[in-house]
Each structure stands twice: as structure tokens, then as C-alpha cells.
Length: 236
Length: 236
DNA sequence: TGATCTTTTGTACGATAGTACAAATCTCAT
DNA sequence: ATGAGATTTGTACTATCGTACAAAAGATCA
Image 1 (tube, rainbow over the protein chains, first blue to last red):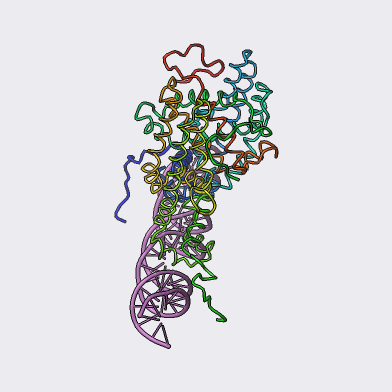
Image 2 (cartoon, rainbow over the protein chains, first blue to last red):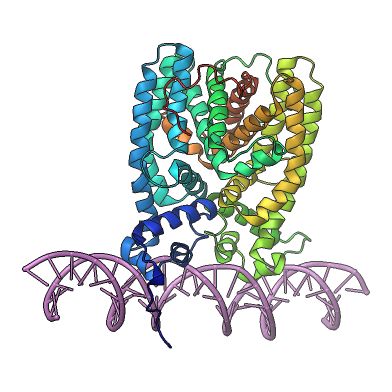
């Protein structure tokens, strides 16, 4: 070792811990958990690999802290918006407001956290796809209450639809939401540039509109398969 | 050695190559690409790690072969069903048949491949979430034609809806489809056991019904935000 | 200033990754 | 049965993984 840079050009990070969290969030959300090494994260954050161990002990601990950081605020925001939505008088407007209360916090930050909620939601989508155990546990125990509250609110607005159908359609909503954040460029590509898949405001409007219509669809009567299946050959 | 299989079909390991492909498919689809090692795959297939290298050269090559194996048949099946759907007279039935032509091949096998298309579709969902490059390339060049054909067919059935909206809603369909295959147990859990998220037939019906309704929703008029946004505070 | 606590750095270690390769084994037409 | 080609096995190499840990550097306050 010849010498060390004594100059102040180092420009000390005010908060290395935050930088590591942000870098990890971004990398996990785009490449998945296992494809990203602790060294990758440290480098992206301008930190030393040992620093990650110091602040978060393990790689799982780092992921856990990311979830702890976001789950509370996002859940709170959803609850607030849902409570407000339930006070809307007009039935059609109320349903739309309920759906919006579910969707909007997933796209926009529920607190001052940089980058907004979209990055964290994308992270959740990726962890869900990878079957990550750490994520699965904390998600189930953090968001299931919110999901039930959402389903109940929808059910109150659409009492004639069986709860089962609403569960399925809410599930589709979350899938569509996730996928919109995972591969926004596919929308741009398929629309031949006419739409911008990365435009959060646009995605929200499209998603809300489509979901409201899907929720309002007639119930699926399992008992009466009247004249279904016009084309597809029967399968099982 | 006690005995050897005299028949031309070996009794012990009929086709190790197929066993490796099947094991890799299953593991990749549930844990993701990077979380699964070549040794994991070999063990699950009852093979030696070196055997994987022999048959597929690299881990990427193995993934590529999985895609090659499924893309053709699934695409073909979709084309056939779409062609048949477009011949349906009744407009409502036709739209439903078109959606079904897109959804059904994703759940059921397009050929004799064991396990059906659901496993491969789930694999695609996971690879998409992880941003896998190998998968991204082959998918874009294999399925974009089919996606365009599907969008065109829907657009012909719903000429009053802007193409952009149809692209978004089709995107949501794929996201919902993926998510249904990735976390079916969430449906069972949220419905408190009333629905079985793993029931493919049920998932297909729910998805088709919800998607048809979403596609038929009124167009989003970007120019006139009339009295939108009843609850959510303005953002950007 | 010097003592103490926090944070960062550098380095190392054991485990495991993907893959190469030669030897062993199997298959099958001759 | 035998030899040639296809397949499977066993092993080894290098790279990188997550993590531990001691030393260096920075921060804080008597």
C-alpha cells in the first residue's frame, strides 16, 4: 500500500445504513434475492461488505429490515384511505375509492422513504415469485388483515357477489399490480410506444378502472354451467 | 449385477435427460433460477451433476431447453384456439372464447409434456420477476406475436375501446394469471378455505369471467378527468 | 486532550457454486 | 461377443458466496 487519500474528496456518506438499505432494495427488486450478493449491495451503496454485516448481521436480516421499514407506513396509509373510502356515499364512487385505497399506497410512498412505495411493492412481487421464506412470513402476518379489510369493504359494496369470487378478483388485482411494476416495459412494447408502462399515474387509473369492472362482473354460478365453454374442448 | 433389462426400454432410468428437465422445471418454478444449484437439480432427478453438463452444457442451456420444449406447443395451441374463437358468432361469447384461448393453454399442457402447462407458466412468471435475461429474450421473440394477435382479436370485438386500454388490460390478465400460479395458497387462505387456489379449472373460470368484464369496462378518457379521484389526495 | 463508544475497513475462512474432464459403464449393431 | 459410440460417474478446479473478526478511523464528551 503506497498511500491513502488524505483529501476530503471522500465526501462522507451522511448515513451509510440508509444507503445500504436503498441499494439493497433496488437490487433485490430488480434481480431477486439470490442473484444479488452482499458485495454487490455494498458496492452499489459505496460501502464495505463488512459494513453490511455490521448493520444488519445477515443478508436475511437486511431483507427483514427493508420489510420492517415499509410495511407499517404502507399499511397505515391503506387503512386511512380505506376508512375514507367507506364514507363515500355514491355506491359506484365508493367501490372505486376502495380499490384506489388498495392500489395507490402500493405505488406511492406512505412516508418520507425515498423512491416511493413502487420499489418496495416490486420487491414484494419478486420475493413472492421466488418463494422467499423471510418475506412470506412477514407478509402474511402484516398484510392479511389489510387484505381481509379490503375484501370485506368490497363485499359490503357488492353484497350479491359471493365472497369467494371477491377473493379471486382481489387476488387478480394484486397479481396485475405486481406485474405492472415488474415488467412495465412490456406495456410500452406491446402498445408500440403509445403507452408508457412506467407511468405510475396511468397504471393506477387503468388498474382501478379495470378492477372495478372485474369486481362488478356477474357472480360465477358454479352450479349452473348453462352453455359455457363455447370453443375449448373439455378438459378434466 | 443380478440382471439386465432385456427389452429395448431400460427399466431403471428410461430417460435421464427428461428427468433432469422435469426436476429443473419444478425447482426453477418454485424457488427461482439462482436459488437452485445444478447439484440440487441432479439430486432431484436422481442423476449425477456431471450428467447435467453433458446434456445441456450449462445451467443457462438447461433453462433454454425448457423454454424450447414448451414455447412451440403452447403457442400453437393458443393460435388454434384463437382461430376457433374468432369464428364464434355471438359477440359476448366470442370475447369470452378469445380470452379463454389465451388463458387455457397457460394452465393445461399443449402437448404430451408431463405436468401440463401450469408448471411452465409458473416458471415463466418467476423468471420474469427475476428479470432473467435468457428467459426475457426468448419470451419476447416467442410470445409477442401471440400477444399481438390476442390484442388484435380483442380489439376487433371491442372496437370502441382504445388499443392502449386493451394492452393495459391484457397486461393485467397476464399478471393475474401468473400470480394465480405463483401463490395459489393465498386464495385458499384469504377465502378461509372456501376456495381452492390450486384448482386450475376454478382459476380459469374466475380469471376468464373477471377479464371479460375488465376488457368491457368503459374506455379511459385521458382528456376528461371529469370528477375522478373522490378520496385520494392528489399526487403529482 | 484523552478515553470511550460507534462505525468502517481489510482480510480471511469454510461452504458452495458452475463447470470441465477422464474413467467407468451402458447400448446396440455387427 | 465385440468394438464403437453414447451416457453416467467421480473428482477436481477456480470463483464467489455469506459471514466473522481484528484493526483502523471517526465521533462524542468529560
